[in-house]
Length: 219
Image (cartoon, rainbow, N blue to C red):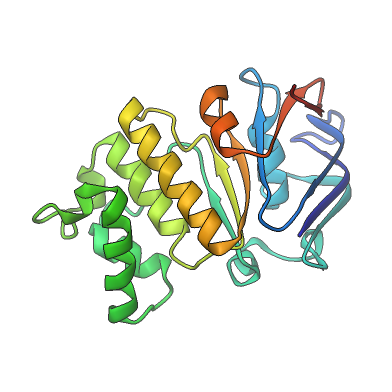
């Protein structure tokens, strides 16, 4: 599925934030990455998405060399990325955000998707919610919408950067259940950045600690 070998990256040519990282993620495998703030967790996943300068190493996804492809192709490869704090189009409605993330999905398919989300997030059933401007949502509602958007194309690899930050404990549980159900049904893989170890232990097959510019298996 995903093979990362000796990846080195950063923001200045004379200083690497990630240095020589190796990581393999198999089909259906769920990987967690934790560590204190500022050690490079977000930089690592941004480097997979080609959002930081690439120094050296390889990133292969299903035999595709990601270092030779632009980020706009990732969706067609089956890779979806959740940016920390959640990114939505604030001037569009909730439904318009979902439609846009689906790249022209048919209305019937979108309705099925919304009904599927409603099983976990009752807010999707609330009167007027789908027509509400995304910019008027609360922080937790925005994160839930952003998660729904990146899962709208049935990705085979989900890369999530702290999706539970700012959520109430009950919503953390809902997000965890939603993700686990999707990953089981789709046999998709996951790379999860988070600080909540208990949540990650329930969801992930392996957890790594980001420290000293590299990954160490968390025991």
